[in-house]
View 1 (tube, rainbow, N blue to C red):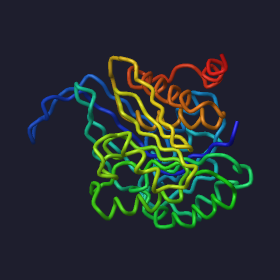
View 2 (cartoon, rainbow, N blue to C red):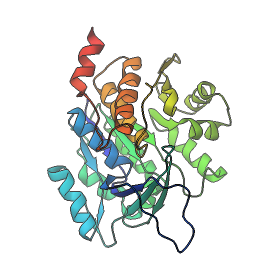
View 3 (cartoon, rainbow, N blue to C red):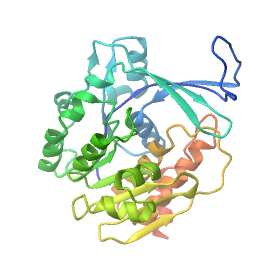
Length: 311
């Protein structure tokens, strides 16, 4: 099993809902569900890795308040070296809707202060050599994203393949954000974007063609994955071959973090050197389980997926 690392945004999610229609200003409504949980792309990814039973390290930061202490406690010894910033912890309030969609209200908080120097002190490059590092939350971790070139140089020096999932930009996919992301992808060995992001980045309406267009911007051995929600996921491998895996039909409860959970399953399977189609299957299966259960569950451990792959 190759080493795994998560780098990026860990914050607090407060989930409330479902809410429909949207309430009028000055009114109050009662909802059926609330949940306070670890959130952020890197946080969701790490929780899924925990459930899969795989080893990993995580580089993140927290604010200097009770939420920050709560997040560090949730990750135990893995958060021992996380810096505590002179800021409140980022809080994201997610309002769910009956159709499974959601609306977020998020504070800036501690996330913009995470720096490359902090990340480098949290990760042992030699122990991660030959592994994968998932870089996420690019448009929320301002200081770190400004130093991405240094981070990519560090990863290259330690033969660590970077997988990128930027998340949706706060200002949307402006031309500046699009060009910035394409420049980052030139240094990455795996792209993990959803269908809308992939087609928006490339201007291609067909997801498979959009994936090929992204791959043309990346190193020759790169893998491009397109997460397609109820349609499963597709991937273009290092040699340009296309693979896809459908999603099962499930009763959606909560889609928050579904893409992050997929990332965790896909990369864990990739780190176990499973065939690409089985990597897609692992990601789709655990994401489908996560969005259809309350409290959230992720299904069987990675070892079960590995055993199935060998049959």
